[in-house]
Length: 126
Image 1 (cartoon, helix red, strand yellow):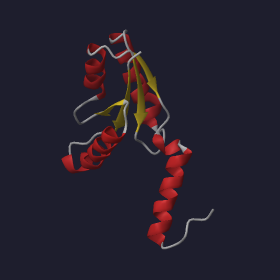
Image 2 (cartoon, rainbow, N blue to C red; image 1 turned 90 degrees about the vertical axis):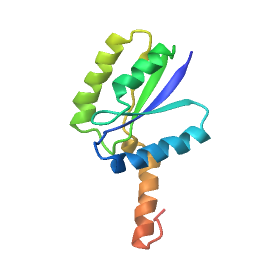
Image 3 (cartoon, rainbow, N blue to C red; image 1 turned 180 degrees about the vertical axis):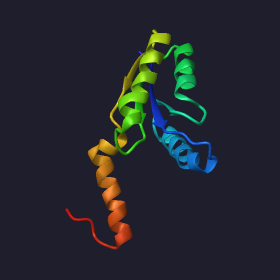
């Protein structure tokens, strides 16, 4: 079964805002073997809709969507699930799964805590 992981960012009309997400995607794509795509919920391309359409037409059978958000606010509770539901209805050959946002992952919290402690000039408590 062919699989792809979609990194989903919010999106912005400002190209400078997108740059860190594009760098993250480029870095990870060179380090990982999995098919890895970057998409935006709104205001930017590639959109989630165009990314899923591309994957579906390439024969990808399963894709997981990993939101690059700190928390599940309105977008992740309502907007994105509605997008995913509509995409699943349109592209029936691909199984889509929306994952929890990266901000809820314990490893993300540990990494962020390390950055904050370093900026504060303090050792990270163990």
